[in-house]
Amino acid sequence: MRAWNCVTWGGPGHLKLGTTPEPECGDGEVEITVKACGINFADLLMISGQFQVRPELPFVPGMEVAGRITRLGPGCEAFSLGQKAAAYVRHGGYAEKVVAPIAQVAAIPESIQLEVAAAFPVSYGSAELALDRAGLSANEIVVIGGAAGAVGSACIELAKQRGAVVIACVGDDAKEKIARACGADQIISSHSRRLYEDLREVAPDGVDVIIDPVGGIFFEETLRALGYGGRIVSLGFASGKIPSIRANHFLVRHQSLVGSSFGLTCVKDPGRISARWPQLSAMLEAGQIKPRISQTRSFAELPKALQMLKDRKVAGRIVIS
Image 1 (spheres, rainbow, N blue to C red):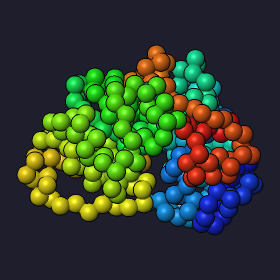
Image 2 (image 1 turned 180 degrees about the vertical axis):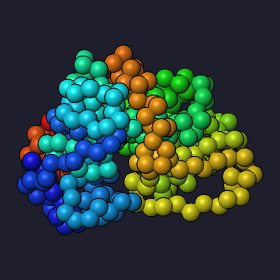
Image 3 (image 1 turned 120 degrees about the vertical axis):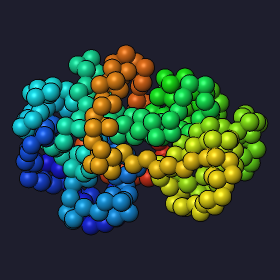
Image 4 (image 1 turned 90 degrees about the vertical axis):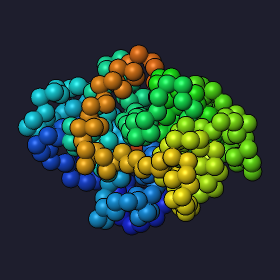
């Protein structure tokens, strides 16, 4: 079957369009004939060899897919052949077919386009887990970094569904429009040289939760604005800089720092992920959450789409159809 192959570590231009063997479907797995794929920043890390998991070369990248179920392994009675589905896979998504464990598969309502569904599982699964890790409650103030990105925009929508007050940090006007469309209450520039002061002006008593996929200076400045009993959730280090932390800061102000890894949780605690899919799918069908797709590209344009994401030339999601 056709697939994009990573044959050497590097950027999008190193990917090769070719073939790969059809996957085998084992116990607790379903085969999905892929009709659309989501593009994720983690894909760039994986093909460059910088992701937490380094598959053996050559491999097929791609971790977010949508299509129809065409094969069922034993123990998959909850799904049916021909059913629309979206899934997270560690890799293998940029191919005509992929196999996924059922804990990582969400049933998708027939009313939802597969291009929309392809931008759903990784972003909303990651966002829901992060907010759950934070214990975000109604009326709490949450700061979301990278708020126009795939996970950031999903965090805004899900935080608003929880009744929280959202401060979105974005880098430009186009990204501000996305954050506002998702329901952000306040917008702050992530490039501000006085980020701490900007946050204190909006939340003088401090914020309750910080969702941080950025690291670096963003982590350090937003942490200063975290109030008593506040929680900061680390999702990654898009800035390329891992901050150093003084533990006494958390002790004195009764604060918490937690990590949130969607991919690892799928492996270590799959029930925690699978339990979220029915509610998230229902919210998707009801229009309470809506992936913000800015561009749809053909399968042949995958390297170009990944390069656009790498160059930060797109606001919203890119989907391969």
